[in-house]
Image: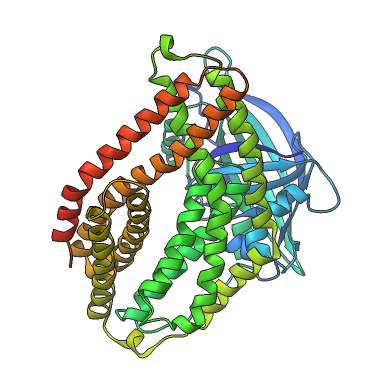
Length: 501
């Protein structure tokens, strides 16, 4: 069984031996700290696991098996932001728990996890408490010995970890007090990072050669790498069911697929088209779960705005049951996709593409003209689809045409965003204007999907002998929202047209 704890901490080291001999300054009176209570000393023995080429360490993740202390077991630490990590824990066992192995699967793949470093720590623990005795933070002074193969290293470090709900400003106050006492913020983000550095085991950057800086190839490959990295990073977030994670992972797949199409004069499409089909598959598997998430939030918001006297029948309970059933199926489908060999093959294919990109002659040319031409081409494609949709009468055919225009808007927006580092403000402005069009078209399509779901909910309610009035009311509201999106579209499109490069 795994559980998660958010860690907000700061690590320190002594600036000179003289400061180390004096020890940690007394923090009593610092930022509401009323007392420093000694909790004794504990011996910790941690073995850190990684792939032979250090993939977890390269991305700032640590996986360890630790004995000693109150939290003996397996710990996987995932970076959130500087000084903030999520620690996912599992019970002590001889092998890596399946729950944790799944969270690093997008990085480890078939490389396997093996012991890399052993850290032996003698930890002196104190609690920093306020005037009422509530714990504000835990202060640890660790005397560490790192063992890797036949190499060892040792050091002393000090760590302050906030208790849940405590203002992070306390760490700034502690840092200020520590500076006066001869300590500084550690250069190493973690014990593992320092151990690897001091035993010559730090991960080497993976070489991904490419064309010269400033060329079209360099810009496109940089964008593709960023989206590949986002795809990998979102995998554990989706498995943990974190908010917006499915959406962000799906966006990364779409951006990759769009870029391979948009910049087909830079990267050979005859090589990348099969990869694009696999990205389409992954986006589709994730999309079922994302669409259900959107519908639930949309319907819940609508119901919150309905007067109580118009809520006829058990609408909230029916919505809850409907969502629970469908979400269970959609999440199972998304996780099955992430656990599949097909997904691992996709990640391997992306790595292979970036390690040896099939570049065309345009890749060696200056970025500005090549990228400008590609972005303009996608903008013209969007223009054709918007014009075709607006020329149709309201109805099913127009709904389909507007959906196709939405897809084109996403591609044009992603193209402009990818080109922004090279083209600057013009591309950024175009991306912003096209995003507004995409949002309107997205709202319209969401309403189309929502109306069909509401119709089915009304049928189910009627079949169960319940009133379907409220579902019909929500259906009418969705129709009104769709009509409003259609009315707003011409003005938004006029602005996006003017923003063309």
